[in-house]
Image (cartoon, rainbow, N blue to C red):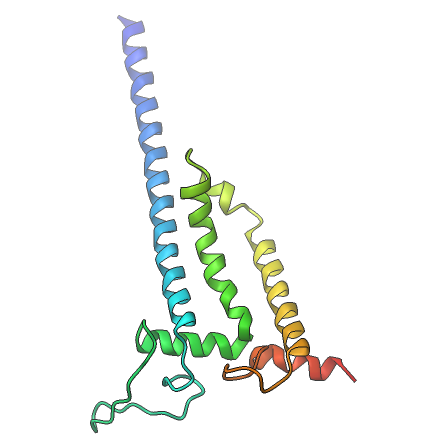
Amino acid sequence: MAKKAQATKKSAEQAVSISRLKLNQLFFESLLIVQGFLGLFVLISLITFSPQDPGWNSQTFSNSLVGEEFGISNAVGSWGAYLSDFLFSIVGYMAYLLPYWLLWPLVRHFIFFRRPIQFSQIYSGLIGVRILGWSLFLISSSTLLSIFIEPGYSFLPEDTGGFKFGVLPYLLTP
């Protein structure tokens, strides 16, 4: 009788641990899906960017109280117009890396690996080091783009390297 009770207790503990694993997997996959939608939102807003849209750098003002509304050509709407203008103003053409960073874990999990991947395999404990590395890569590549692409050949608000990192080449070169 005691063996039967122990076997039932072990199977109940295993069932709890399996359900906890499935709950963690469900949470992880739902986090990836939300991250994927955010990546698609950013990608569509960057692709359909128009300098005539109202944004951080435009002098177009939309006042719904007075009735002055300007057409927004961004496919995502005013949120996409402001987001794409902000990203292009800060980092220039390197803003196209943000959707890649957001969509890559989703593609890696659902397309390349059919077996379940744990949260720690994609987001390891050294996430701070990864973020620092990607930030340094973003800064250096924005600076290099602003050096190699001549000013005036871009439709972006603050030229090719953005506001922050387009200024660095002028400080670093004689």
